[in-house]
Image (cartoon, rainbow, N blue to C red; front, side, top):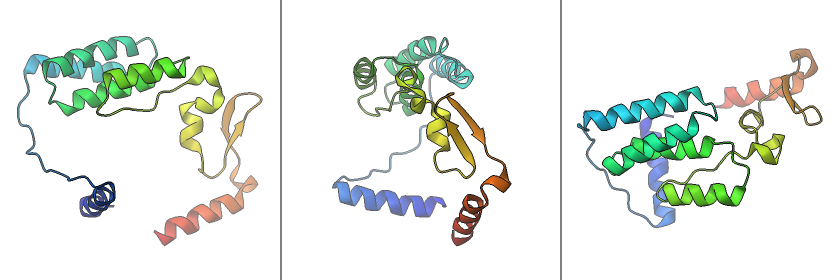
Length: 160
């Protein structure tokens, strides 16, 4: 979908929610030191290891404190907090809502069960992907073992 289709959908959603969309001018400048902190946080976020997330959170908190209008800093903070392997759902939500009230995210809660694994969640509905709940494994079935799923996916793709 192109940008025009997305804008139309956003306008329809805004109308239903009874909110007004504003078109703010694009930012052209940011303090270089703040942007360097942001890039460091993104680097840690890209590695996506639980050990890196606390430092990424600290970096994004510094970015948002220095420049509250720099939206990517808020997005990075929400992503870093949401990517932590939280074990207590209420504590995770408290942390997210405390740090990111404007853009809360859904936390990963892998300690609650395999169904909280990001790969399991993202693979739902993809043809020929199987979940072994007893072994906590995700695998691909052979195409010859799932011809109907593949045919349905191909037909859906052809319809648009």
